[in-house]
Length: 304
Length: 336
Image (cartoon, rainbow over all chains, first blue to last red; front, side, top):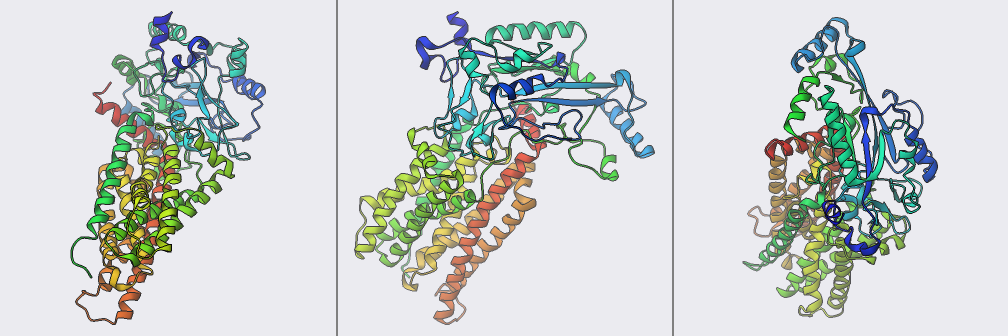
């Protein structure tokens, strides 16, 4: 057990918790079985008393909630993908683009094939609870902390609404709530975890697209799942965020995707800003020294 | 992600992705899509939630920091009239700065929350401590110089100058230590741009009131800083490549052009207002020119910070910048 825990280590976990440290938990969101029911969005809002946010018609397929933010901690993305008329699946990219262009030129429309020429991707996005969390590193008050479960939580009575975490998150997860100016995000249902319950979204998910569990176990399960999908000819299936060697040290909440991450509004190669903090401070220091030297030099030479 | 997964995807990646973020004209839609895929054009990273107080804070923090260095140098060099004015500039800067920050946060206690901890991984936290320490030292030095006109430089002056330089440059670290591509990719040059802009504003503020016989160092520094700022900005944009468009287009671009015009105009006015400038002119006219130059440098510095501030929004709001920068990074790492 000790060896497995070490693999999943974060900068502030499990060491700082000593005996109180619990196994690191997270989500494995398998988008290949997501049916876009949004039960996760609703369950999250209900349990966490997240206020109402934008409602109405976005024109973006069945997505009416847009993206993660202060008042949306789970978000289901809907992506409609289609092949232009006259193209067989498996055709090279340039042929597809050319066919789409021809269709547009001739008809001024974007007609597409039905049946296997169309596919619908759905994915429930959430805070990634990064091993190296940009929001946590950037938080100037210590409001954002690492829990005994290895998750990342905003402590609301200390958050001062500075908004630095908002620009430090490579995934655009955190946002300011307009009425109180503070920042809110997924807590991975910290209160439920403390009561040995699974997070609301995972419990509500009817297809087990959202799987909750201990992170090492989830990673094993995910590796088996992606292998199975490859065997069944779904070569496009790939894991996203399961690798501890990525730019954020691996996600606590990772995904199985059926297309490139950016298709789902996910960054293809996220890097926590802290990784380049050295060069940031070096440049700031060098500029400060240069400024002092430059101003001192301004006093040399002839006296006027 | 392993190579074979990617390879197997390219065969499947033949779908035309739905990207209806913005309505397009028919002509635009006929162009083959070379844009990276996005989710309805929605941003990947969130744009800042910072209010207009923040770019003004960048300006006043820079003015305070560079003025403290200028003031200490003038005290050491035995130019009491210049020193007094620069200390006044520094004092104004450190007084206005926390007011702006608190206004952005909403209430004073929220500023105090930052002083619960010292956190080296957070430029915002480090900056709060720098501002606090520099504010104390600057206030003391400014007060002592006001009380004693012939005061020689001592510990408060040195401390104010030593903390003043990082006060002027940490705000650059604050924006480059972020997930916004046009900011973070500019991390090498941005502090130098801020240092130059801060120096120009400090020289500009001093030139508004300094008597001609002590003006020379401020004049020289104003010109030097203006030229340096333009030079480093050009380098930065060149190295940023396509990301530079965030600084050159839209509102950021307008501020950028205004900053350049004001900064170079201010420097030119300083040169023309110099008593050694070969064109004959009345002293009054020279002094007016110098004052106008000072005002232009101050305006240029404000515009510069607004340009950088707005560029961050524009970069964040364009998801293709995030994707392109990260794809380039992946390929640069050996094409994982």
